[in-house]
Image 1: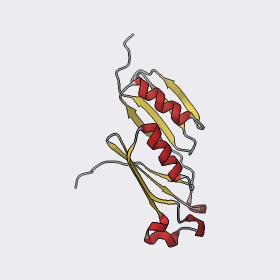
Image 2: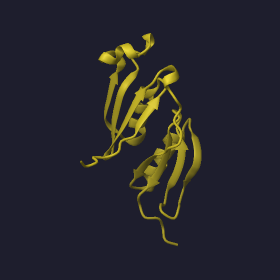
Image 3: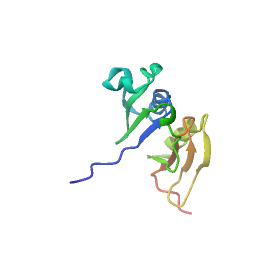
Length: 142
């Protein structure tokens, strides 16, 4: 048996669709797919006002796939103990993406040069998801 990959599956408290539309714009994501509870046999698992909430979200981001779902009531727990790493090719993309995620979010570590990257930063976005932005370009030598 071979492992095929790892895909983050993010849990939201009713705002999965808004978050994924935001990620689509912020990351240049493609192939956004949203499946609502009311469109599936799982509709009975959702509260009366939850038929329009998201049972399955998928967004292609570069070579990866970001997944998401809405949980309800006590089933929802705020995310903690992890960061989703977004690797980018250049500093301009790092700056743009970090600025987008920071809008309405909380900067944990400003975007800055590190010994491994010319642009690395950490932010918790407006939806409570923790991100690390990591530029893959070689840092300047100096």
